[in-house]
Amino acid sequence: MKNIASVLSILITLFFMSCYGDASSDLDRSNTASSYNNVDVALWSYFDAFEQEGKRRGLDIDLAAAGITGVIRKISDPGVAGTCQFGNHVHHVTIDEDFWAGANKNFREYVVFHELGHCYLSRAHNDQAFANGNCVSIMHSGLTDCSIIYSATTRATMLDELFDRF
Ligand SMILES: [Zn+2]
View 1 (cartoon, rainbow, N blue to C red):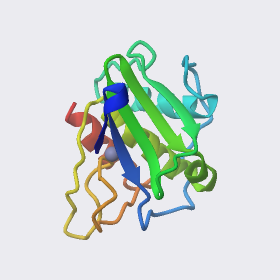
View 2 (spheres, rainbow, N blue to C red):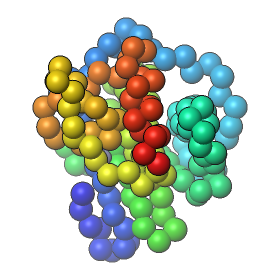
View 3 (tube, protein in one colour):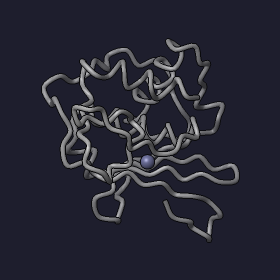
């Protein structure tokens, strides 16, 4: 986390994880309903999924009404997959375009949800690990050595953790 004084906001970065599991089980993204102003179209289905998963857990999430914006752009800092910039009237997600091009849907969702965890849920990082070495939270910083396993098997549990602390 670092302060960007010129825009009076805080930028939180997510570093590429050294391992992320289960590339074979892409999540279904066939039913996109919503549209979002000032959000790249490629991100819409992920924003929509974030709202739906929150709704399943009793949260009424409206990212458009909350003014969350998002783009896929080149992030110049090496190894950074995504950032959340927030401050006065700014809640802005940036996903690195090189990361995006090389990631499957699971890991794209992981990073978008992580940044929305900062930008919408106001969550900080959680670097806890289970006894088996897997990361507990989507809000892992990417800077410790627990294993990110975000798959059809672990997704529901990790989303419970993400939303239940809101
Ligand atoms: Zn983060």
